[in-house]
Image (cartoon, rainbow, N blue to C red):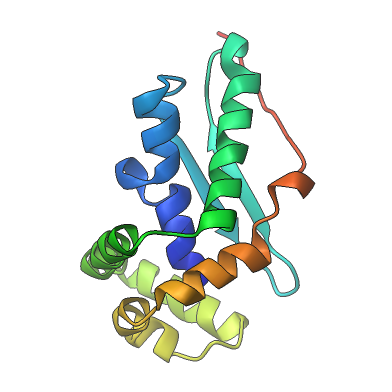
Amino acid sequence: FPLFVGNYILGGGGFVSRLMKMIRSEHGKTYGIRSDFESYIQEGIFSISVATRNSETLETIDLALSALAKLRDEGVTAEELLAAKRSMVGSYPLSIETDFAVGQRIVSAKLFGLGLDRVTNFRVQVAGVPRAAVNNAAKTYLHPESLSHSMYCCMN
């Protein structure tokens, strides 16, 4: 949960995320950018996805990596944490409003040995994440210096 909340603040939280504020709002490099963790039984994948002009690609990558490093090195603010937790807790019911979505959550929880309380107590668990745990997770799992850069481009 601490890593999940930290990623929400970095780039999983849409327009309120650091990546959107920095790369879209402050620098005008893209219409959208996000970060995500894909979980697997062993190791998962962390990704940052963005579409930008060819001429802005390298600067955009540098900005994203600096945002990642800043989160790791400086952590999240109390205000960011409160806003993220409120949003995640408040929007959770919308993410499980279909039988299919509930089923996906249950299968995922069982697959990873997390127990059904991962689904039933999600909002309580997110609300209880302390700032120190988010900052510790960022220091432990975010390593911008060792990321590989994959770029997929399409032209019309």
